[in-house]
Amino acid sequence: MSEDNPYFLIPGVLPPKRNCQIHYAHIATVFFTLLLIFIVTILTAVTVSNVQNTLDETKVIIDEMKIIMPQIQEGYQLYKDIIPVACSDKNFTKFYPKYAELICK
Image (cartoon, rainbow, N blue to C red):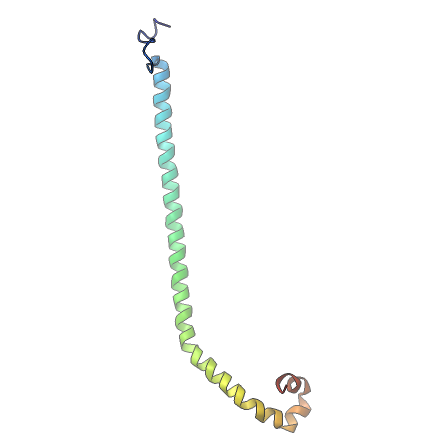
């Protein structure tokens, strides 16, 4: 062993073959780490893009809700105004008893 490594008595000094193996393992580990970082970066970019698309679609839905909400409120008010008229109409209660039973409670 002393012929391969004249410094074998010094702690931390390894034979040349072992040093080469450690060096290549280090290089492989660095490239593997860079590959993992690259994969995580790509996944993060895809996720951010999906979140952005979801936010854009949500904004469109909210804008459309702002447009139709007054119409929904107006329709509900008309519904509340029509119920007493429909329930007092004999034709409605006679020809549509199931609806009259549900509405005119």
